[in-house]
Amino acid sequence: MSEYSKEQIVIIGSGPAAWTGAIYAARANLSPVVIEGVGSRTMIPGGQLMFTTEVENYPGFPDGVTGPKMMSDFRAQALRFDTRVLTEDVMSVNFSGFPLTLSTNTGRVVESGTIIIATGANAQWIGLENEQRLAQSGGGVSACAVCDGALPHFRDRIIAIVGGGDSAMEDALYMAKFAKQVVVIHRRDELRASKIMQERAFEEDKIRFEWNKVVKDVLGEEVISAILLRDMLTGEESELEVEGLFVAIGHTPNTEFLGGQVDLKPNGFIKTPTPWRTETSVPGVFAAGDVMDDYYKQAVTAAGTGCMAALEAERWLAHGGSK
Ligand SMILES: Cc1cc2nc3c(=O)[nH]c(=O)nc-3n(C[C@H](O)[C@H](O)[C@H](O)COP(=O)(O)OP(=O)(O)OC[C@H]3O[C@@H](n4cnc5c(N)ncnc54)[C@H](O)[C@@H]3O)c2cc1C
Image (cartoon, rainbow, N blue to C red; front, side, top):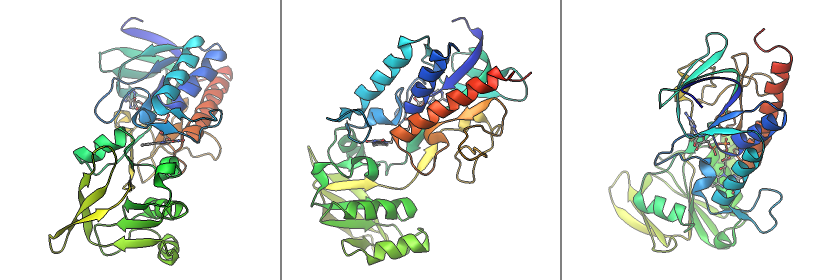
């Protein structure tokens, strides 16, 4: 592709939403271009699943599959049809008129009749070296309890959840089904979670709270064995033996490159105003996957919305697009 091109459909991203959108768009003869991203310490082509080991809840894989294998298969399936890929980052967009325009980190300018934003979100981590090492090796540290909590490793064990919002309470309640005990580590002496979620967590016998504590380190060679806690009030440090750690301190959707040209929800996720539709505030621009989903945040729902976005984009073009 030259440094300038004019396309029918461009898909930004490379997780389950983007590749599913590409499969649908390619099979509808739209010859999509996927801009998959270059990669950084926190984001790599293939998306969040590149950072996980076993995926056991995606239908069609009775024996489970590793995240990287699943994403390389998604990509291969899209490439089997007429999908072109650019390993570049979208740096900025111009949605002030038609055609829709975007620019990448190489200086390339792409114009398109329609665009699907599927740039996902980044799970926030505490930011500790050992946390990242054990998360990437499958050593019992994760940022997604619903994804990894049911693995045999965590059953009947003591596990810790970091966070104090609704997500942390949901994760704690979810893990209480499998774990022997769930210890919620929270930096303050009261939760941010909604009243109802707090009540549910307080009522669950298996959940206990460590208030005013932060995690200073994650201990263990192959797998996690303990966490080092620091008391925010006294500065005192203590070790807590755990066999699992789930970090539930939020997600950051990847929307910075949009420069405020697409309406976002107050929490930063892309707004899709019509229920059961992926259209955004900009005509011809659709959003799919974790960048617009602050609720389910699963590979299968990302793929589902990727399909929806491609079908909507196809219909939008068929009905004349910008004309
Ligand atoms: C540790 C962990 C384990 C998980 N395990 C499971 C599991 O077992 N089962 C499950 O269903 N879900 C799991 N999830 C959730 C799942 O990974 C996400 O729901 C899913 O990956 C979201 O897909 P997505 O297509 O929206 O985008 P993402 O997977 O977030 O990928 C988006 C990608 O887009 C690209 N991108 C971003 N910005 C730009 C840009 N400006 N230009 C170009 N490209 C860009 C990047 O390469 C980025 O990685 C897990 C998540 C985590 C963090």
